[in-house]
Image (cartoon, rainbow, N blue to C red):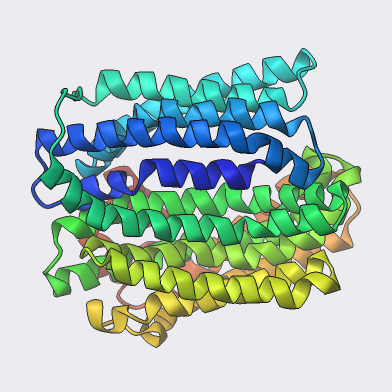
Amino acid sequence: MVSVFTLIASTVAEGGFGAAIIQRKNLTPIDCSTAFWFNLSASVAVVVLLWFLAPLIAGFYSEPALVWILRAVSGGLIIQAFSTCQRARLNRELRFQELFKLELPAIVGGGLVGVSMALSGSGAWALVGQMLATNLLAAIGLWFRSGWIPRFEFSRQSFREMFGFGVKNALERTVDVAVREAYVLVIGRIFNPLQVGLYQRANSFQQLMSLNMYGMVNQVMFPLLSSIQGDVARMRRGFQGVLQLTAMVSFPAFAGLAAVSEPLILSLIGPEWLPSVPYLRALCIAGALLPLQGLNLTVILSIGKSGLSLKLAIIKRIALALAIVLTYRHGVMAMIWGQVACALFSWIVNTWPNRRTIQLSPWSQLALMAPWLLASLIMGLSVFLATERVDWNPWLELVGGALLGAVIYVGIIRFARPRGFDSLIRSLPLDPRLVRVLNILLPSKNR
C-alpha cells in the first residue's frame, strides 16, 4: 500500500540526475559533486514531507499501522541518495560486472535480515528491514568500489545543465509510477484487501522478470547509445541486435511463465493464492512488452530528448488512467485487461519517434521480433496443454513444464533461425561467454 508513495518519492528525490550523469558527454568531478549534494538535499526534504503526510496516507487506506511503516521506509531515500552518483558513474563506464558483484551481496544480506525478522514475528516490518538493509549494504559497497568521493562544491552552471535533462526524465518516471501504481490505489480503495493481495502477488511475479529485463536493457543500452549518439547507422545496427536478443529472451520467458502459472503458484506460495493465476497469465502479456518499450525509450533518451520522452509518458499515462476509469466498475480482471491494452499502446507510442531517430518503423521492429514471438506462442501453448493434462505434484509439473518449454523453444529456433541474426550478434558488445552459449544453442547455418 505504501509502495506507490515511496516509489514516487524516490523518483522525485533522485531528480533524474543519475540519468543526466550517464547521458552527459563531458562529465567533470564538479558535475558529480553538484548532483550528489542536490540528491542528498532533495531526499531529506522528501523524507520530511512524507513524515507529515504519513497520517493522511494511512487514513486514505484506513490502516493506522501504515504511519510508522511509511516513515521508516522513507528513511531509505536518504541512504539511496548516498549512492546515486556512484552507481551512475559505474553505469556510465560500463562497469556492469562490478555493479553485479556489489549488488548481489547487498540483496542476499538484505534478504537474510528480512527472513530473520519474519521468522521472529516482525510481520510487515520484515519487509521494511529487508529494504533498508539492502540499500545500506549497496551504498557502502558502492562508496568503496566506485573510486569517487564527493567534494564540498556546487556549481550552479552544472546544476542548470543537468537539471534541464534530469527534471524531464524524473517527471516522466514520476508520472509513469503514479499512474502505473494507481492500480494498487484503486483496487485497495474500491475492493477488499484480499484483491489487493492477489493482484500484488500476480504483479510481483510478472515484475520480477519484466523490471529486471527492463533494467538490464536500459543499464547496458543507455550508456552505450549515449556514447555513439549522432552515428545513426551504428545506433540502428546496435538497436536491431539488442531488439532481437531481447525478444528472444522476453517472449519465451513470459510465454513459459503464463503456461506454468498454476503449478508455480501452488509450489511457491500455496493453494490459497490460486485465484491470482488468471491475473498472472494476463499480466504476462504486458510484462513481455515492457523491455521492448524500454529499449525504444532508451534510444530517445540517449540523444538527449528527455522532453520528447516526457511527452510520450504523458500520452501513455493518460491512456492508462482512461483504462482505469473505463474498467474499474467491471472488476479486477477487467482492469488488468485494460492494463494489457495500454502496454501494447505504449509500445506503439515509444516506437513511433524512432522511425526518424534511427530510421526503424514499428512494422520493421515487429518483423524482426516475429520469429521469436511465433516460436514462443507455440512453446507456451504446448507447455500449457501438457501441464493441464497431467495431475502430478506441483513441483514436478513446474520443473517438467520448464524443461519441456526449453526443449521445444530451442528446437524451433534452431530449425528456423532468423536471417541476419549471426551478423547482428557479432556486432554487439556481448560478453564472450554469452556469445559461446548462443553459438551452442543456435549454431550458425553457415557452418
